[in-house]
Length: 598
Image 1 (tube, helix red, strand yellow):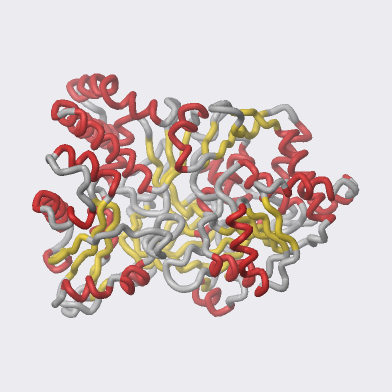
Image 2: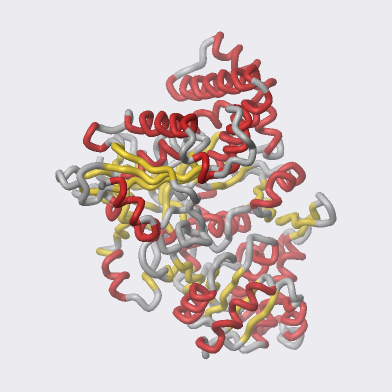
């Protein structure tokens, strides 16, 4: 199949904007709980629709008083927290455009995003963020206001807007329509300089409503809730934020350091995460079992095999009596503990950003947490396709969401058209023209559609490696298979223009502790020392051999090297959304790559 379309289930009026949902709900049912925010200890304080709208109104009036005009850009640099959502909606209510900046961004990146977007103001979370902005402020003549979140400036902004009348505020809030720009989301820059994706109010409202009512309707039920911990500067988390506000799903905020205790106390009904999070959950459970005893390790592996078999049986038909019995036993011994670790109420999780892999997908469904894998980009307002709870095909990224059409071009590239497509790239007509052709967005990804319209991702068009012998090799399947090994943190398959395919492999330091104990290695052994340890080398060799079984001989990894350091965002090797910056890794590890071919 070359093209598959799903008609929109929800049509929105041209006048619709992102602030309609929270303010309509506040007017009609002000006492309804719409968010929960951290209180003292592990307590969560409920925030009603009326309270949320009042906070948004106060900040928005302050922005109006500060001279922020409709269409002005306001930057927001912060980790995921309650104030992020308040500020996002306040910026929209003031008629302005939110420009997210990752909390981990460097001063140079901050300067580029604020300067390129022409932001008039910026909210920054910490004193370190404020210092970074101050260090480049001399090169940002258009930046008029810098407000600190932790510094208490939100109260000052709100106080400054006390003189703005309700009528003036309401006129400003209603001044934006669906066609107006809502946000500039800068791509995380796996290649080249980040580009500002122009996403409108209609992009977010229509995508969210069609996703909630059509694609994940079984998740968005009464009493549902989610705990956001991915960066809200990323479009994936941002769309979920909007979807919860649109659908009345209770929203909470967390971050990776606080995640486990927050999950236990918040007890969400669904989650969203990138595959690396699910890999770490699985690998962590496996390592913990192995560290306790050989018996526990055998029980975990038997439980994992049973979960996978049970999920496959659900997909192919019905589990038999014996499989059901084993599954029930392991539910008590293993699965229940894994569900309890994420609060005990999670039934579904949405995964995106990279390939999850069939084994993990089947494992978690067998455990009782169905992962709905999807596909999308910043340019598609996050989702383009997603698996539905009642129509899931593990190993694919699902069907198009309502209002979206997916087409496979002659060269295998995935093209997308629909309610979710950006209007263009800010200040970059050339890139806009290249990416958008006749209403179709050219994703740069390669894929295929099956007879039922399910999409599978097969690689990245610009990342296809062509060996010296002319063999085209997609690195993603090999890399995904290798990362599934608990000892491997990241890997990069190389070989463009070379005689054969090779790989750079990094070690997961969290997994090394239990491994050293299990293999009688000194706890003090460093990654640099482990690189030459025969036992560890044997395990990595086995992982490479396993990955090679999934490809032809010409595509197989012939040589690999274990690096002494992991790829990191700080070193410029990873994006904030945990994607490897291929060009940066190839540049920084050029000597190691050359050594593989010498």
